[in-house]
Amino acid sequence: MNTQTYNAGETATDIATVAVVGLGYIGLPTAAILAGKGLKVIGVDVNPYTVEAVNEGRVPFVEPDLGVHVAGAVSQGYLKAQAAMPEADAYIVAVPTPFQDDKTADLIYVEQAARNIAARIRPGNLVILESTSPPGTTRRMADVILQLRPDLTADANGGTEAVLFAHCPERVLPGKIMIELVTNDRIIGGLTPEAAIAAAGLYSTFCQGSIHLTDAATAEMAKLVENAYRDVNIAFANELSVISDNLGIDVWNLIELANHHPRVNILQPGPGVGGHCIAVDPWFIVSADPENSRLIRTAREVNDAKPGHVVAEVKAAVEGIDAPVIATLGLAFKANIDDTRESPAVEIVRRLAVDNPDARILVGRSFLGSTLPDELSPLPNVVSMVTDDAVAAADAVVLLVDHDSFREIRPEQLEGKAVIDTRGFWRS
Image (cartoon, rainbow, N blue to C red; front, side, top):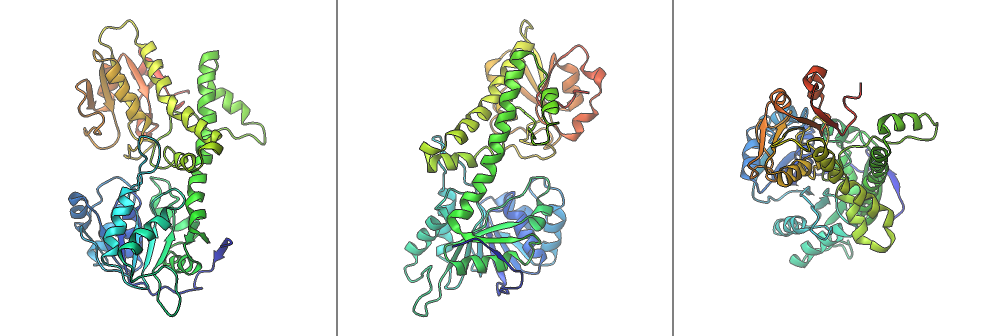
C-alpha cells in the first residue's frame, strides 16, 4: 500500500462504542479524548486500582490536564472502566510491550488482549494496535483472534464482512500528551486499505494533525525508526561527554560552540536514556534484522553504558570518605514527570546502593512523595526524603533529572560538596 494522506470527512465513522484495552500512559489519555468527543468509551485494565481510580474520575499517574478530561468524561457518562472485555464497535489495544532479557519484544500482553477480544468481537469490528511493536505484530494479533474465531476473516470477499485490523502508534511526549494526542500527525497502517481508512475515520474525530495511511508493517517500523534516530543522536552526545571527561573538556561548552555551525545540532548528554520508547524501540529493529542494524545496536550500547560512567564519577567523588552520604536528585526518565520506566536514574541509584553498602543514598524527588520504585524499595541504604534535607546532609550531590523544582536549590546549598551534574543544570 502506497502512503497517502487521509482527508478528514472522507469516510465518516459509524463507530459509537470503543473499548480501550490498557489504561496506562497512552490508553487512558486516548480513552479520555475519545470520550470527550461523545463516543461511549469502556476502558479495560487488569489492575483493580486503575479501574477504581478511573471510575471515580481520578488519574493513577501524573500527566498534566489528563485529570480534567477523565473527570469530565466520567461525570458525563461517556467513560467507564472495568476488568472484563466488553462488546464494542472498535477495540484499541494499548498494553505494554516490554523487551525480554535477550532484547526481543515480549508480546504476551498483546496476545492476551487478542484472546480476550476474540471472545467478544463481531464481523465489521475494528481492532487497532497502538502498542509500540516490532514489524508483524499487528498481523500476529489478527492471527490470534482469527484462529480462535474461524467464522471471521480479515479480508472481505464473497459478501463476507471482514474484521478490520490496523496499527496506529502513539507519537507523544510525556508531560504534553493531552496536547500532542490532538495536534500531532498520525501514521495509520492497515492489514488492508479498508482497515487503514476505517481507523483513520475514528482518529479523525479528534486528531487535528495530518493522518498518513500506509500498511501495518510500515507503520510499526516508522515508530521504531523515529525513536532509533533520536537514540543514535543522543548516543553521539553521550559518547562526547565521556570523551570530554577523559580529556578535561567541558562538554556543554564544546557542544554549544560546535552548534554554532549552521548545519550542526548536537543534542545534550545525560546520565543515559530511559522511558518505554527510546530505550526500548531500537532493540525491536535490532531483533528484526541483527546483521544490518550495527549502528542502531552500538547507539543502544553507548547509552546503556552511560549510567556506569556516572556511577564511577560518584565513586571517585566520595573516595576516602567513610560511610559517605550521597544525595541523588530525580528518578524519572525525563524532567517534570513521574514515569520511571527504564530510567537510567533508577539504575544509577540502585548500583550506587549495591556497590556501596556503607553509603547512605538519599533520594530527593519532585514526584510521588516518599514512594520508591520496586527496584529500590528493598535496599536498606536508600531513603527518599525532602530535597533540601537530602542536599544538606550529603557529601556529594548527583543531579540526575532536570526537574524545574531543582532550580530552587541555591548555590550556597552546594558549597563544600562534590557535585556531579549529569544534565549541565547548574553550569551558570
